Length: 423
Image 1 (cartoon, rainbow, N blue to C red):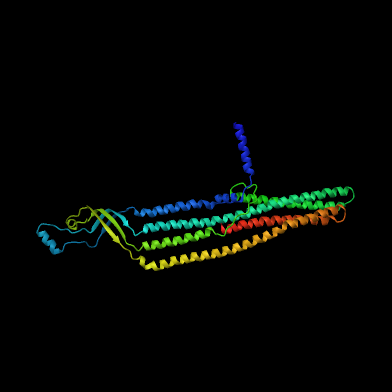
Image 2: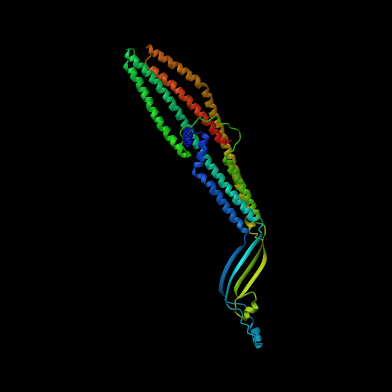
């Protein structure tokens, strides 16, 4: 049972390895393999940490202080009052000029006018902008995959047609060998066909080298072994436009809105409670400390309402800057849509051109094939020479190559159009 399972697994792995890779599989693999993809998680984690830090603004703010001072003057009793107090038997030393304190200051925000919430929203919108910009950068990976994938498909077809051409030339070479033996053809004619076949073999070597280099590049770019790319189906493209550049502009506009709400929150008053305590000299009971220089515990609690109107000084300019950011984003949107529309028109025209060219390809190939077969018959009867036959064979092959180019280029144009619209 285990042997059967092992054999089945091995067959499955072989089948998987030999299965053709589709364009969509290569695109997804390339996006996963591209180093920038890791930044998605880094941006998300950075945004979460920033938001968490902002949220901690609601936690009590604790400040520890230690202070030692020496003053040029201190609060003291008038000389007449000191004389009177001495007559009554009381010595009023006054405050010492060297003073010390070690304490804590605790402040708790009760109402912040929405500042923390606005800052939190700004941080999230900034993270959205970074993610959208990264999506724009990653989107370009698709076009690079398309270029390599369709170039590889074109080389596959050229290698196939090269093999067919070699077979045709080999057949003509075999026929001429027989004719030379029977004295109905010259050796130079056979040499001419043999040289042409060897020239096609050299072309195969060049094509194979290009194919291997391009296949290795695509495999490295996708992070998987691309062994047999398959010709993709004709894509369905709509009239919409879902390009990531447009989403980037939307996030930039959302960021401007969040920043404006933060400006509004900066104008509102703040309410907080506080507690202060220290151990040192002098304390809050100044009269007692004027009579004796002893350290004491002191504390205070209270509420504080603050309203910083300094934000009004720059509010107008800050609002104007945000409006300029919005207008810049809108101009970028209009520019992108215009260029995108022009690219779409150009690509539609290219697809239509290849479609019209392909409509004549089959007929041209059929005619070239008839001419080539007639030339082979004429050569057998000695009506034409080998050069005419080779010209007709190459013309038929060139027609087949053109058909392959038209087909691959039209498919590539359709996927380029899909890339332009991302629809």
